Image (cartoon, rainbow, N blue to C red; front, side, top):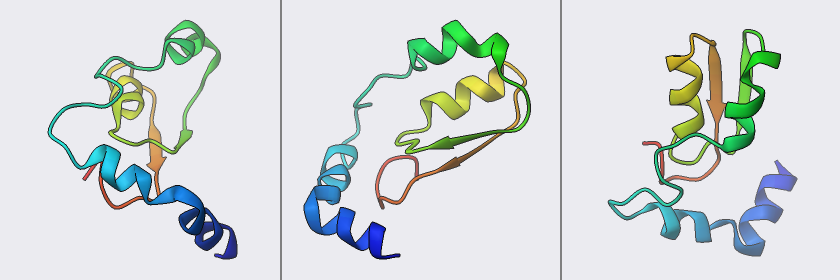
Length: 77
């Protein structure tokens, strides 16, 4: 938990501000690296720092089971 507290103390809260609006910060298209390499993945995948959830949606649409995680209060809520 110290790592998370350290992160939040050094700018982690900026993500709450960034994701608090109505528009998508990074758009709705999945990360291009994931699209290019999706054939190398198998169930389940663990998607860290998922933000607004665009990559998790991509995994679901391609039939790959995924679990997403993020520590910030705004975004994929």
